[in-house]
Image 1 (cartoon, helix red, strand yellow):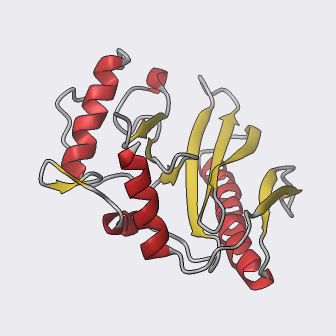
Image 2 (image 1 turned 120 degrees about the horizontal axis):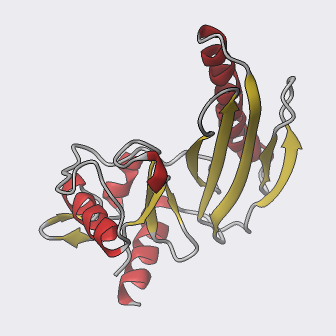
Length: 213
């Protein structure tokens, strides 16, 4: 409990100056030939809403065009393409985290491919929070940031052992933490490891709670 209070206090003090109500999340369809649903964010400030939505739509557009380009280059057809989304954190006057789960199935492929893309915003200003910003709010753990590559590597190894997950390297030491991360409703930071990034396809996407006890 002390850790949660400390983390929340530092986040609110250092990153957020104003206190607006939680953003409203609705959905819309991709404006193209793909019938995809993506999130639309509405805050009390229209400029902020536009800024946030532009970032989300840019990723949706990038994803669709990238998948179409890869399929064309490899002479394959797309059998299925989709996006699901969730907002694990939408705090009063604070952090808005949006997670897009993107999936594609290519004809004749052995299995579909899935990716998770994350967005973290200051919902008062619309500023996008990068993984580098975590250094401003991280507590010290083992003499360095709790979100340092060394500490995240240790937590990943422990998580894999606890859940009987096979890693390509059971002694893995990350050179950098993943760019895809999000905050949950308890303000825990989660790092996303994509399919094949550190483990076989069968393990799936690994969602690592870096603040779990």
